Length: 196
Image (tube, rainbow, N blue to C red):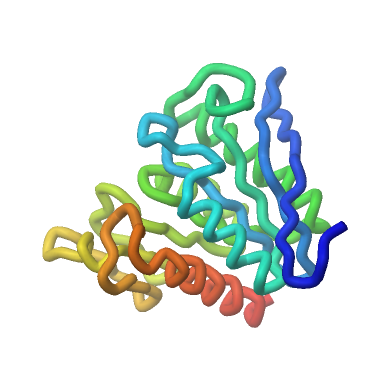
């Protein structure tokens, strides 16, 4: 039994080709849903990544459904770890399961670290894209939200968006002020809800 205020994620199986990836989903009454793309496998990414868990928890507390998953070859997900084309296939499979679970709603895709290329490949199937601590970014358009640690904000980083959230006192690990990352992504979800 789940008491008021508790957070329950359900194990979720995501078919991709002949293999199955593992995920965790949370039901919520509000829309859009949140699809969390963990950092890439070579960055140590998986659904248990602390930032991804924080995003899912923050979305659930605000009433939004969420799905986070392990890429193929990570954790209990079947298959071999892949490169960009297969990672896009993994994310597209997760997106379809998330949409089915949320009645067809388009998700906000929250990409952590280097998975931003995967997120932008799915942008047409999403209500929006939020890049959390993206790596190697040069410039993004005004339709993309960006959440970045204050320590990562430098002259080298160019972000052409009015949707920039800078997390004060934080570095790429967000060991400081992690809840502010979740709050920033919930602000993105709230903004998209008013646009539907």
